[in-house]
Amino acid sequence: MKFSGMEELLAAIQKHGVNLTKLNALEMFGRGGDWHTIYYAKKINSLEVWEVDIEWKQELERNLPNANLKFVDTIRTLANNTNLQKYSFVVIDNPQNLFGPNLPNTDEPQYCEHFDVLPYLNKILDDGIVVFNVNPIPYNYEKFPSWQNRRRKFYGNVDTSNLHLNFLIDFYTKFFLNQGFDVRFQTYVRRITPTPIEVLYYFGFYLTKNN
Image (cartoon, rainbow, N blue to C red; front, side):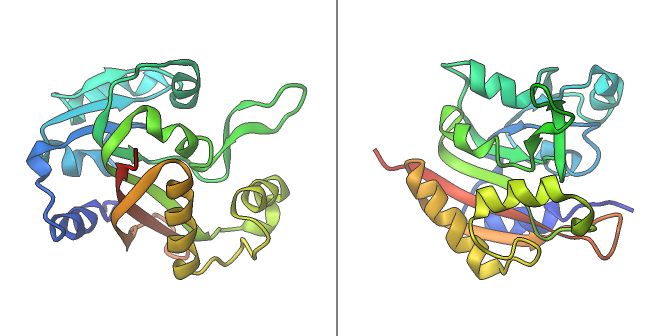
């Protein structure tokens, strides 16, 4: 069973007139490449994959033989580098909950969902599509107070255990405008997940720099 919805998302993007064969893609949390990257890798012009754990190297090479692989911490790479390559299709398949190295002097992981990636998007995207996971109804949310705190900090004074799609579309549209982007179009599809009661969406936004 595939845990994706990427084909449906690509079909929705194509309906807006996007030619997939011209896209230069960056997959930012590659893992083994088999969850969804493999479904768009042959449809695009080029693919670069970032993955922090080199243990996935052989699987990535097997699943994505034509990809340029880089074994780096995605968020540190974005934060610490200038003049990064620009892409026209950026996919942020982030883990849910908190992840990554711990905050100094704590046992709490430093990163949360896509919240630490999106502020750096203008380093790697001028005119193109960003795809990221959105979790409107987090699974087992009551067990993770630190996750709740991080989501409240990002989304504001709303019920982050049950976010409506209309709110989320409006929230991200305003977020990208504040980051210097105009939204040419947006779309979303529900992901197929290992746990049927887990609710997760792909959000896709076509952004252009509003110089």
